[in-house]
Length: 107
Image (cartoon, rainbow, N blue to C red; front, side, top):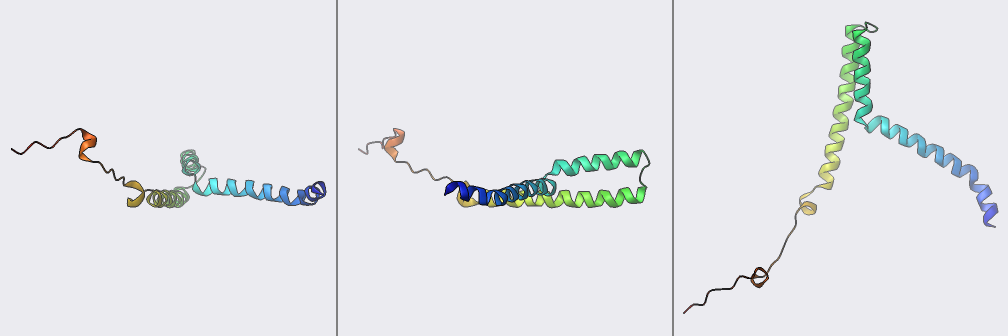
């Protein structure tokens, strides 16, 4: 019975695998700042080699920097969610005898 189930679900599993791989690539393209930095370097090189005009260079550069700012803002939001006051604070309770401190005798 399990063999028949596996054979019937094989196309579904294959499609699911392909979709997961596509999602990983899209996430990397949208959220990886190194990709955008590489695009900025390529853009600068194309501009220096006079393959694109100054106007096109500035327009494309502004778009890439805007995407970079969005990624940075998203990363900061994720850090703020992880590092809240409740999760970042530690409370240590001690007793006086734990530290070897003794109260002086009052005579």
